[in-house]
Length: 127
Image 1 (cartoon, rainbow, N blue to C red):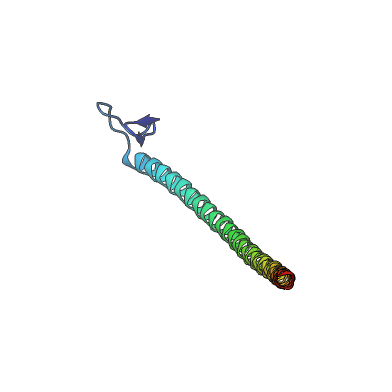
Image 2: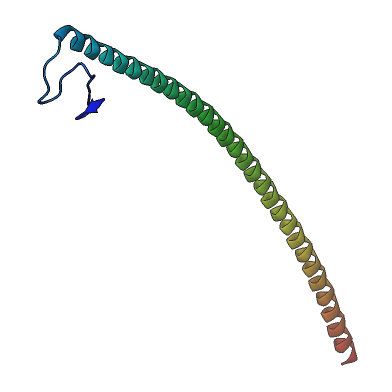
């Protein structure tokens, strides 16, 4: 039975009880201590096993996270490359549109200049 947090057998006297043979009480205490020691060793083994399992799970988790990070970085690089190519394509398209617009403006200016000269010549010939 437990008294005040310590294990006591019927052979060990409690406070105010008559004393019994010393050998019986000592062997009972030894058995109790051995049991406690055995329980502590089992707990220690279970704790060690749990720690090893936790380390294994953490290692797996870290590997998965590292793989995911590498995959993410590769995807981000690919997206940056795609965006860069899209920007280049858009810039090239805008440049071509601008060149076409400038060619059209130049041609319109030349036609306008010819038309103004023709009108001036007609006006000059009329006078």
